[in-house]
Length: 247
Image (cartoon, rainbow, N blue to C red):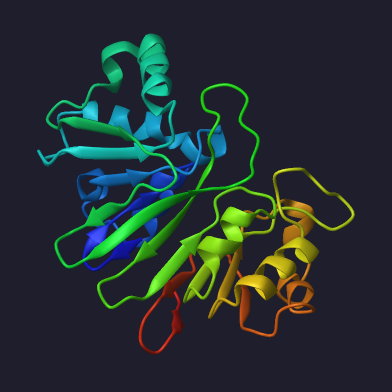
């Protein structure tokens, strides 16, 4: 994700680094990664932290810029436990590692133009490293906004953060028949969209049985705005004239 020239890597789950390099958005490889944001610490959202830190231990990357990691309370402990397993293999050779634990209500400036990233609380069970799961709201200098739900059920924090946003990147994990607490099915996602009235919706985090459905049509039963079902490789742009660009 890029906000007013600031590049952000969001929730690097297993395989994220390979996909990032292959899609062409990081021509500099791991040298291009300077800021990582985490919604929560489950392995499908944080698994490639090990791969990233291991890659930065190699002498091949050239960047000496600090690597900044932002995530919920428990992030520092997760990194300590990973180092307990892998030792110095996870120590970047040339780059300082800056780790910041954030909470709902914090605001992170992005560059000097007024862009920002703000975490908010969502409803997703945490039972080990952290008791907090986050969504993120991004705002550029022109006031355009993107909201990333992370993993969550329907909750007041999500509805409030998504209210009137330009683009809502919303999880839709399950079918209505296979309800999983802490995740959204199409009916629940539709209710969130109807309440928040975002300018545009992209559905993500689809379990295989949900991905096989026409989720856009199902959510569209309750929400009249544009809804798209994300596929690997899609690129979305929030601009004065919203558009979708192929990767």
